[in-house]
Image 1: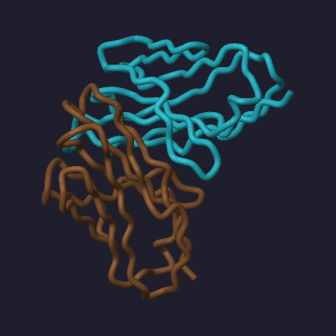
Image 2: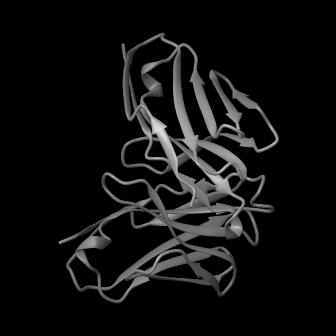
Length: 114
Length: 114
């Protein structure tokens, strides 16, 4: 069974810092990996999706990398802002399951203070 | 553009009462639909998914059931709620090949069982 781990569980940084959030997964047989953002009491917003054949994806100040063979992904946030404060979740779409179901990590709770 | 709606946003119910949560998707046809639960201190857990009208698959045995009476409508139900059913319920959709399309989430329903 696929297991997804995110480190750290929480992170508090001053505004302007560059950040790295880590995600690891146990089974490399995946279709893709997604990074989501969740604000308190809200649903999930998809940030980036990396196909299994890709190495990275970029969107604005966000860059996500994927090393499928080692079961690792990182989300890089450049020049962090207070508005980036949220919980960041990674999820992998598993090839071994019907409909490529998503397996989620427990998230990294990010606080960016002014 | 596609949108997803969930209601109600919050719900407080006594133990033993019935439940009906509704999710609808607009702007797309024949979506894959999903119900997830996010319990306190735990990651997101897939409860049900559906690839078409009347086609429901359950991921975990539980006190809940799901139905898809129309193409873009997904309903989560229970005949008698348990305390352990408390949590944040999220509906999601995806289209086309689930291997390369992201899942998009609604704003969720916060369910509290008293």
